[in-house]
Length: 104
Image 1: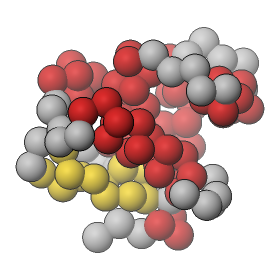
Image 2 (image 1 turned 60 degrees about the horizontal axis):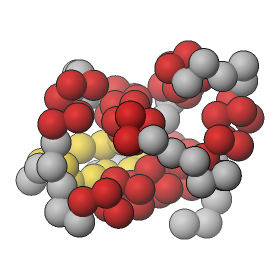
Image 3 (image 1 turned 180 degrees about the vertical axis):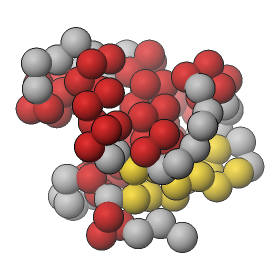
Image 4 (image 1 turned 90 degrees about the vertical axis):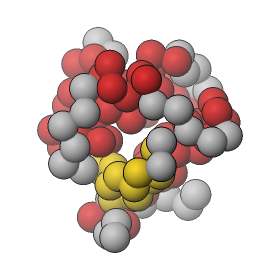
């Protein structure tokens, strides 16, 4: 079970439950992947509502990695979930809000 106090959420991807957590290492990887100078730049990017499908893959991958999964970005890209793109966006929003302890 996910511990939201530690910034974890649990999601069902392709019929399997996974913990997601944006650890410091996962956040650092997001900065690198997005070519950002700092974490604030990453956050501002998504607050503006600008997100690419590759961003979704990268965020999910980082969250899965932070949660202890060894799935690759290619594995994440191949995952199908019920609800399609809307569900992916909702997962990312919940992950960020839990990570930074904001209201969902």
